[in-house]
Length: 285
Image (tube, rainbow, N blue to C red; front, side, top):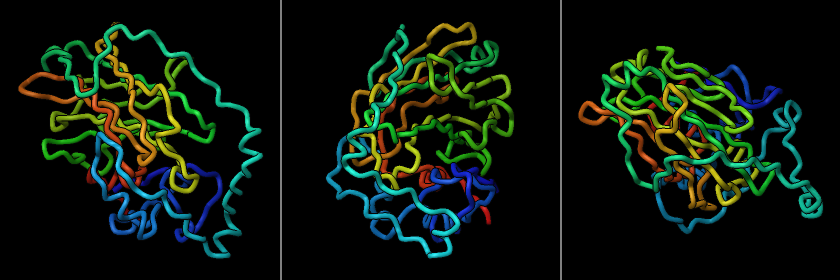
């Protein structure tokens, strides 16, 4: 079982939880109750959609569930800015993109070497960056370590801002530098042999409650660096849809004794809670 650290400084009741990214607290939830973290019945139908490549005509997310009076007192929801206030807000600070030395296209798969070579070479770095047209878009990267069945090999086998290291110490999450916003290091020498794939997902925090989506994002990329700092592959997204809040931007997977990088670029209307459910993470009360 795993405790998922939330993004908030104040405790709130479960009835007022709108998304798993909306609060940081030391509680966790069952597989049954995880579905109630960020959706009403209408949202549940939207989150059931699989990862997709093309826009899907869906209605905007419904208004967040109104919290109880006691919950509201414990953690009042931020007031939605007025149109005039939003218009006067400063534009988000943009980061310059790094030079991409070995760019690939969406769907392309690039060999990283044999499993033996990867183990002997040691570490690879998956580096991520993005810009946004709306300053409320606060994004983060998560890495899910999957077995041959496409599910995590255990409840603690995913890395994100609230759990910065995998159980075997092979995957480490860290804030980036002035170039990349976030970095996940993969050490093949430590990687559990049951792990067949590592999926990297870019998720917008508080997307449901703040009505945010990937149509507000720009310049999202992943680049894979080897142990010497040389780029093995890089992929910059070019498709941004208003009906998704998370993007599987890329993955590293093992195929017939070799490790490969796959530029994915597919989106889903699920937040971190929904992704945990998707990849088989069970969290407890």
